[in-house]
Image 1 (cartoon, rainbow, N blue to C red):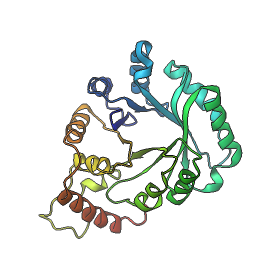
Image 2 (spheres, rainbow, N blue to C red):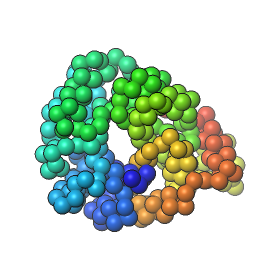
Image 3 (cartoon, helix red, strand yellow):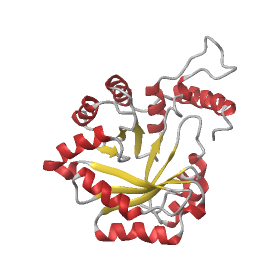
Length: 254
């Protein structure tokens, strides 16, 4: 599997999605509203479904319990497929948001063959680490970047012995890692988006790093950067230092 995965939530255009396919990307995360992605995938899945990994999920609803099955069935219809490779419960911020009956529902999807892998997306790293250590999930989707490195001690050490898949997102920290934080030298070096993705993928615990470009050019730049491989230690240290500066200035947005 190519370790760079694609989300089309910023509507990069069908040309960009076909380009990703041509370049060998095979992990695609769909929200359901990203009609460009869904249209392309419906087209390409007809003859070689097994070559692609489709991920999607249902959001945690703060005002009531989500209907996971309704969301799953809708995605199956939208994508024209008999199964989803990775089905996630998204936006789990507290342990109480993932009660036993929802865990059982996800397991039923897997037993029925409608989802090959199940998991959650969460900012609660300690909770994710406990679930990983218990072997409760097949996949954990979480934030990891140069400014948010907490997974290095809250999640990654607990992946064995069950070794769930790890999917990361917001490598650029919603583009804050591309901007000069207050107090950073005016002539100081700034990261590129490609460096942000390479930082994440330099960590062997990350199986897939999602990219969500808004156009073909951004996608091509990100893929070209990732092909260069892991960052050297000098660049890794620069990214950590810059990430610390960004994190200090954005503590309100953890």
